[in-house]
Picture 1 (cartoon, rainbow, N blue to C red):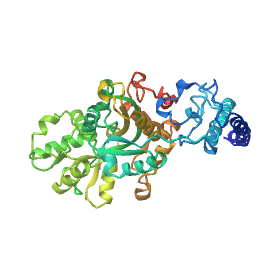
Picture 2: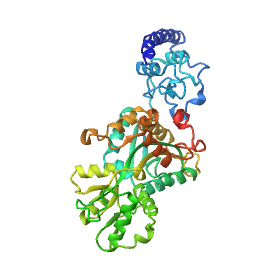
Picture 3: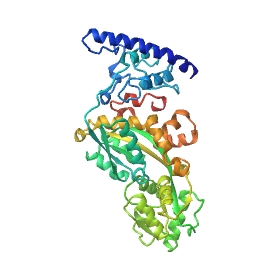
Picture 4: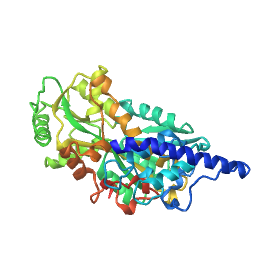
Length: 420
């Protein structure tokens, strides 16, 4: 880091000198910009969805300026695998961030992109990001950087969200059910899956906990709720909507040795809502029942005074909740109209510091901690090896966020050691 700071003035001097040369050359050539893209730049590393700007635009804001120079300086001397590695700062795509990249950046210094025509990006998303307000915050921050893109979120459970994308009615998905995401990808509908965040599910219930399940494991708690439910002493409320939360619930019932389809017919104690998380929490609270919820939805509804329930089964490995984004596959004949350029730009933004910082800060002013734990800092620094291992075990496919055979035009998304 000290070396990078010392190098910054030298790099800036280089940028200034080469920029002056470019300006003079431009004047001699009737105002045509020459730049120094040169043969050193490998165009195969620059995705088509970024063709509105140039490789030296490291922070992808449409300008090559001091901010890009600072980013290059911060990564100077790094190679893939280093914590300081920044794939976008490797302008000439040779696996080293060095003086050659500085020369490339200097050649583009002062460049300003012409933004593309206005466009709309439709994202089919899990209800928890919508109902907690996180979607609005992400939308505002992303559109501030990329003003030509308008994001429309469709708030749906994961199952419906994936179906919407399969039908071509959404450009991408933001979901939280790995077991449902894998068939979406392998079925030819999705590419370039990236994990963006995590939190946990919890079992919540009445303050007096009539089933006496406080502190139990999820499996033991469900078994006891079923037993007491059949005796008329407990109520369970299920979303029953094929959402990510419902998918986790079904898996937990199965782990408990209980058939979800069968018990869902026992309407005396098992109540199905077919609705989102907030509506399900409200019904469970009114009935004095128990339900499975994600942490963010529970905290938001409790803070807003919607429910008076308490957590009876706390966060643990079996209750891990992982959020991912997946782009529509533009090679699928049914999805050729997908807005691939914008969805890839949104995914890139969500998985770099800009988007991850928004996620990291969301909820801290109200709850003292974020509602969602951003994934990038966790995987880049190894700050919580236990949580990281849980995520990798639960939400990775063949040891990676997205197997290489299901990636498309996404080289800069997968140039870090944890993406191999």
